[in-house]
Image 1 (tube, rainbow, N blue to C red):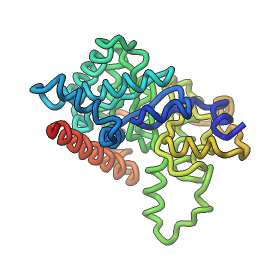
Image 2 (image 1 turned 90 degrees about the vertical axis):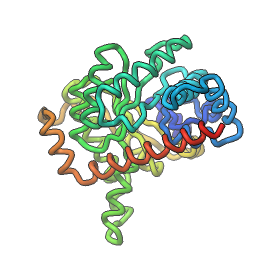
Image 3 (image 1 turned 90 degrees about the horizontal axis):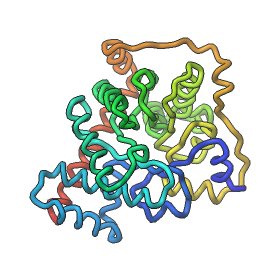
Image 4 (image 1 turned 30 degrees about the vertical axis):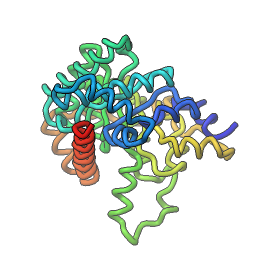
Length: 315
């Protein structure tokens, strides 16, 4: 049994890619996308026709409408290769607008349903700002399930759990990146590996809190930099992994054991935490890493959305 097979015993494996041709090789249950991954995919020759078709069929419509048709087209293709769900992201430029996020999410879901895709097979990705979490709470009440992304802090996770969102994607690798950069020459890789990795520790704390208090929101670790981060989270509900790291796991026969478990979490002494809007904003502001990475992530996704729009205009 290779490490990928072993991991699938404890955790649902999700492919983090817009390149649906790669999915058959690793056989994940679900797949996730974001503007950066779609931008990367449409610049490959094999995917250029999808971009051209979306633009041709909806020429003259607003760019945001064409964009959503393109995202849904990619999602449809991905769903042909996975048995589970695909995550499709709302424009990051709406991250601080609850009403606009809800409207956009409803449109994306309507486009999927118009193509015969069951809403249970789609997760709407939304940045875990206060406004994004409020939007997700409203959407969940309507039966539109959400994946809250760009999640770096415990307060974001607590607010998402209280909102009843379907799934969160805490970013392991980006947390690791921040702490490594902040430490500079003082960083010792061996001291921050495996369970001691700051991103792994963050996801572990969130997982344990949810399981201790019976919060139904699924925890999906994301944004991995190395195999050690993945194996240290074996047992997490889901892990979304790049095709490159999935291939490395499949090529390794090293032993892999379960690291996280709901039973162990339930035995822990973990108090309940509540956040109102003011408390959430203060807690996020006090976490320099989380506030930095959230802002940076939104800026990056916005920039890639603009690049994608430029490609659509050039077709």
